[in-house]
Amino acid sequence: MEYSFPESERISYKSDPPVEVKGLNAFVQGDVLEVRGTLTAKENIPSVIEISAEFQTDGGASTRDTAPIRTGANEEHSFTISYRQSDIGSVTGFTLVIDGPDL
Image (cartoon, rainbow, N blue to C red; front, top):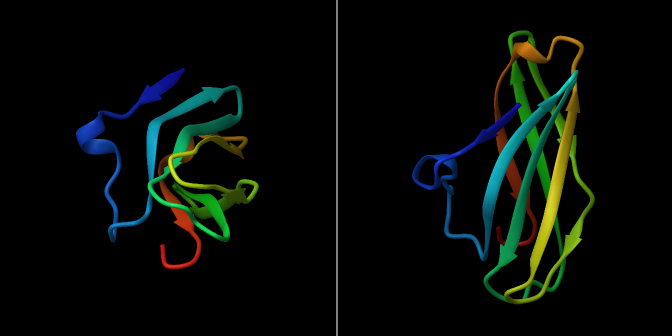
């Protein structure tokens, strides 16, 4: 099963970060939910960026991290965040978090 998010509804930023996320999709296969997308830097970022997702479930929240990304200006990096849950239907949403210096 695949969920695609309309461009106008899928992403809102708390600030004007020097990176943006494109092509955000969520896939469910068995007991695994994967969030996939592409991170693009608008400018050269001299340090590592970390992407994580906090998955909200009926019973609380859980965070899964991806590998750190080092990027330069206008570079694109695909990412995947996986979440395994025996009751995958209990996932009610997720928040994508992009963290790094001055982000």
